[in-house]
Length: 174
Image (cartoon, rainbow, N blue to C red; front, side):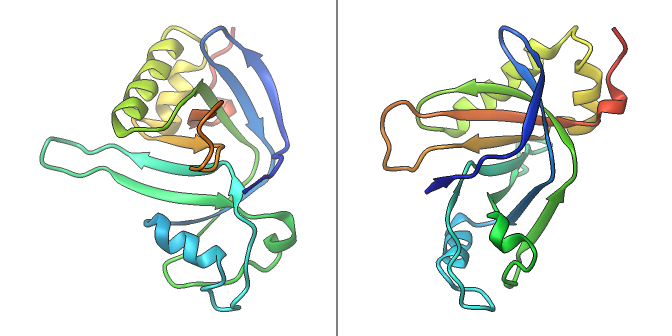
């Protein structure tokens, strides 16, 4: 797995979270990780292999109730050499993000559904009362993104993040 260096700025670092602005990100995503992995292994319309990149992001839309299911879309960052003409494939979601702002909370270890939900809730709690809180609520609502930077075969020093997207114009003045 290669780590693709996204261009980003960090306009604010707080003790428990920080704010990043990413410039021009390009992701490919599918509902099932196995299908996405097949895609980068060459099972696409061009039969072209694509480097696996980090982080792998999962967009999570929590369920609305106990009898509903959450939805997940897993995505890989598209390496620059593939961005002009990414290989098409059935059910592929292409996501082009212009300048995007995210509130970020970092955590370690292997990711579990329970821990991810706890970390997302904690990020919302950490943002409460800050000038970013209303913008994040408007931009993400209860949705969030899980960014995982390590291969599943790496056991030490794992890095994961919760991202909550927002629009800078919605940030309250100080």
